[in-house]
Image: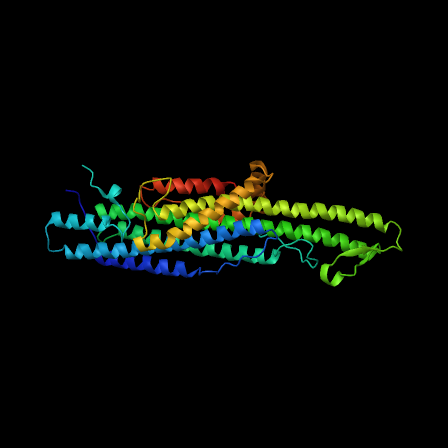
Length: 116
Length: 282
């Protein structure tokens, strides 16, 4: 059995920091916040517009992913708390489940599988 | 040092040079604003994983989190760099267009001062001069001006097309980053389900598809131009090595340090990005 340890309070606080950073980061850009001045050529204008919209989307996706990490940290902390009174085995299972939750959380399956 | 835009008045060259420069400023600001967060998050994770005198978070979930966080740190840093590179392309275009405009204006001003040009009938609207027929050689001067003016306008168009090519390269990297977040990246399989919630993927996907289509059309159009990769590459080097704007700013932006050990997948996106941004290096 591999070792584990956790400062639940610190994990919750770090999760909070992640969420706060994500919110701040996302607020730096709102839809249409980047103006699209004319370059003098409609085709170049279009390419510029596409790139600006892509920057807007990547910025948003990144902020969302950071937020998810914050939430995930808090979920991991909850799992640790729930597992406090349980056996070592179930505590490990709780940690692995938290780390591999699908849909809500990044999928860590490939990384989180215990090495034999 | 940002490029200097000379004051202009003639509107001979189409385009909003000052608006482009303002956009570049907004993008530089965005890139630099994101920068401290890379360090803030990395510091927080490091604290969590190596707390002095307190319990250190370790185990499978801690390892998984560290590896995944490494992706975000790299992506955040990478996006800052790509935004700064976009800003530099736009800044460089604004400078080129304003410089061409300034050169045309200088010729008109000189003609008016020396007396071989007069303000034309539509001067208020077009700023177009006309030859002063009382001045010997004014017709020749006018023909030469029109000829050179045509060359200037052509240079301006070429500058726009080069910028479009450079922006399209940036677009390719951004598209790869977007696909990464919806789990469709060519470069890895770390997150087959994607990093976003299902609802978010559904929100982002049609928008990504739409932009992907736009980029494809624009690249097809650019492929029909006579610009070779060498011309574009040389121009990109000029942006970094000449004005040094990107090089200087890149130095201020957090380097792509992996926070976890397993960042090889995102490394694919980042190295593709590196290929683009390295063109701008000093």
